[in-house]
Each structure stands twice: as structure tokens, then as C-alpha cells.
Image (cartoon, rainbow, N blue to C red; front, top):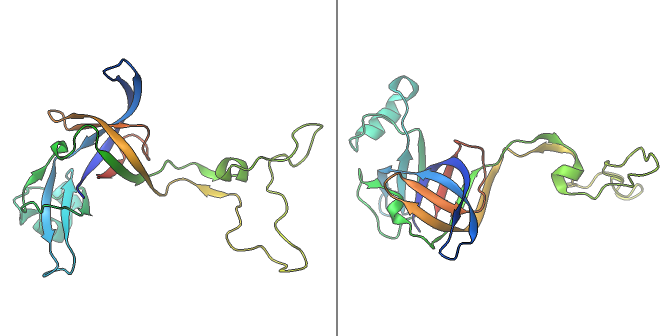
Length: 203
């Protein structure tokens, strides 16, 4: 499995060879420097640590600056993430969108949009109660459960609450186009998060 760290640019549409419209999300993926290669002998598992973006020295700890300087980077990356790789690259190498090809299936992980405090109709898709004749409780959750036994609300009951703003993964998204010159990845469909939020794309 291979992966990259990216930033969501927005959504647009492209047309395939037959003229069909395809909705896509544009992601600025990479270039990602390889900060560390972890092996079973040294760390107990195999992984490649990648970085993305950069932050000023005053915002980075000395440990972060030293970790980045070890592979020749002048500034510490803003985002650090580990991925599994079939072929382990060398430390200090730059990984770009060229590790993906059109037609690849990927999974994209990000932080979903925050929706605030929402009711059960919007949060869980409840159908609601009768909406006609001035019904006073058309969007309430209804009965909480049996009264006699167990005389309490069962754990896990779907209720109103905070919606969104959580780690979300969408699988089996198709890579429609790869723009290596501009480090852009065109992924079919929507992905989690707002514009300029960070994403983790892996095969």
C-alpha cells in the first residue's frame, strides 16, 4: 500500500473520452518528503513516515526541527503521517502524485465538516412524526425505551448531539486524472472535509 498527504482544493467536473460528465474532487497531494523509514528490526513494524507542508521555526519544537533537519529539510513539516509501503523509499526522498495512476482505487481519510448540535432527523435520518394538523412533536426522537424493564435509556441510543467534525474515511474512490506538473490528484466523487483541510490518500 502506498499513500500521500494532501490538501483539499475543491470540487469541479471533468469529461471522459465518451463525453460523460464526471464529478471530481481536486486534491493537492505532495510532494511529501520521507522523514523516516521504520523497520521490524528497529521499530517492530514496517512503515514510512511522510511530511507535508511546512511551518515556521517559532511554531515548531526543537524535536520537530531536529527530526526534519536529519533528512535535510530546512523547515519542519506541518503534517506528519505514517503509511505502509510495498517498496521502502530512502529517507529524504520526495514522493509525488506520480505514485498514483488514472484508474487506481484509493481511500481518503479526513475530518468531516462540523454541523454543530443537530436533532435526530438530520443526524440519524429519522423519519419524524406526523407533520400535519399542528402536531407539536414532528421532529422529536419519540420514546426512549421500555419503562418497566430496564427502566433506563439503553447505551448507544440514537439521540440529538454534536454532528460532524470527526475522522472519516471514504473507500473505493477512483483516481480520474493525475496532474504531475501541479501536484494535483482528481478523485471521483466527494471526500471528507472543508476546503484547505488535510487529507490522507492511500491505495
